[in-house]
Image 1: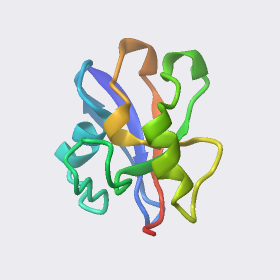
Image 2: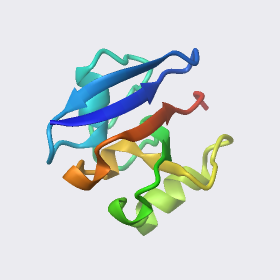
Image 3: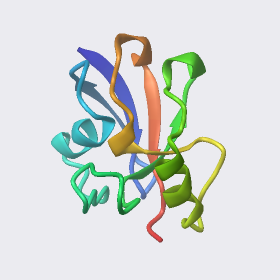
Image 4: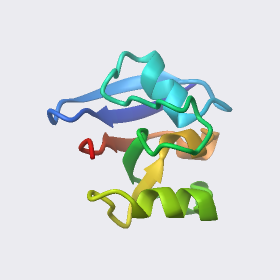
Length: 105
């Protein structure tokens, strides 16, 4: 099990556990964060699972795909650490990851 720190849109941070191999989107939703809509269910077609990743282990995070890059460009809240949670598969190297759910567009 991995430990992930998740900050919701109100600024409340909570430590949760998640299984390696799960999508970050699934781990967030399974831990009761309903403000992460994930309307497309992980198909990389809506950007409603936009999060900010704060990590020291930048090598552990896979690079953006062209589709993810385009969807994030449509957000008014894009930052350098923006990612779509449906495109990040959790690995052991991501233990301790800090994630903030972005504001809604």
